[in-house]
Image 1: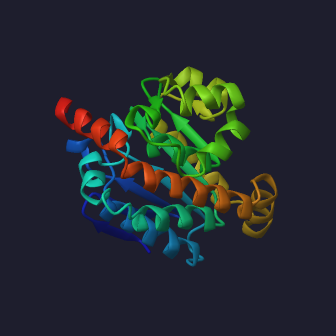
Image 2 (image 1 turned 90 degrees about the horizontal axis):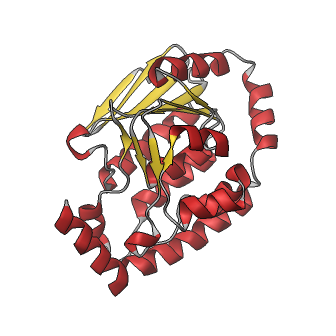
Length: 249
């Protein structure tokens, strides 16, 4: 897999590193269902491609991702169907290869919780991280209710996921959400990914699996989160919050 492009999602291989890039700058890389489906497909293909030894997520200047496309969620929230989202998250958890992220600017909602699955997160000083789930009448997703306390500690995880506090790059690094704050996340993340891709793959795979949480526990937590999330999408509380958000945007 050398280069793949669909609407708003592009993938290109540089050596043994596959970069999956969100390209929806007019919406600050808000992710809709089609984008989730495209990324899930790319991850599944990468997992079976021996030429790929590391996967890197990236965005556009100023926006890693502003989170879920709220208008898209409003359209399918009546049924609570989250198939494309869940397929993407399943592909993230299933991937046996290292994950690296390059963050510049906004990392909101899934733009933050996805980073908890990454092995290395490089962010620029202007990056900001926020998960406004409770403000939108929703609950944490992507296994973040399990991963964030493990990575950040319980108090910082509560500040992020329940309080919805905004973390600047420095606080995100202190809490462990970000590996390193760098001037050029694009360049440094590729250097990190290339270094990982050069390591003996089987030894790295085993080491990574030993360091990560039990996948059964993670999948169970993600399924529990998804049940609550789907119910919340249909709730009057969330619908009112979504309408208010769209009215301001």
